[in-house]
Amino acid sequence: EVQLVESGGGVVQPGGSLRLSCAASGFTFDDYAMHWVRQAPGKGLEWVSLISGDGGSTYYADSVKGRFTISRDNSKNSLYLQMNSLRTEDTALYYCAKDEKGYSYGSWGQGTLVTVSS
Amino acid sequence: QSALTQPASVSGSPGQSITISCTGTSSDVGGYNYVSWYQQHPGKAPKLMIYEVSNRPSGVPDRFSGSKSGNTASLTISGLQAEDEADYYCSSYTSSSTPWVFGTGTKVTVL
Image 1 (cartoon, each protein chain N blue to C red):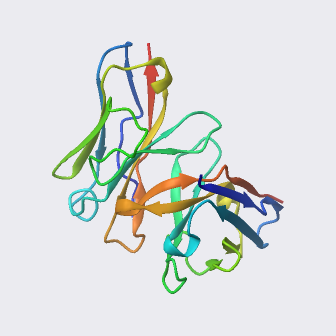
Image 2 (cartoon, rainbow over the protein chains, first blue to last red):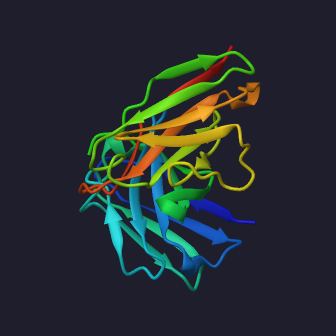
């Protein structure tokens, strides 16, 4: 059974940094690209970033480009999101998701909450 | 890249059929067969319901079906059931600088 468990969320001041982690199990981690998707409180889903299975290719939403960095450690079955220069509009529940057929998000974690506030 | 456009809400009675639309452009929905649909119950993570426009993952009831015409994709729920009450989101690959985009979301109410 696929399991994705996010961690690392918390409260941070504007301009601050945070590193999210996603621990994966139940599948061959390095065979799959991985996404980060976020959802602001009471709002819709927003795609954030994707990393290929070997970590060689990364993609970002315009809203986070230059501030966020996605990475992975296949030896630890772990996905990361380094978030710098955080803004109040980055406040959201951050999900990691496993890439499936047709660029769909086949499995999701339960999310980790990031709150950017002074 | 703007979000794909979905109706804010759709409702139906048990047993009826409803359809949720997802309108984009030729750069996303119309240009690729990489449209997927997600169901999200309150306080829960989203769940994949349809991928590649019309394919159902194993375990998803065949009451859920997807289609596409031009720049608009659709999710149809036939034989609506109480447990189908949830938020639904479409998603598409896009050729823009933000390569993946979600729809605005639709709240489905079972009357």
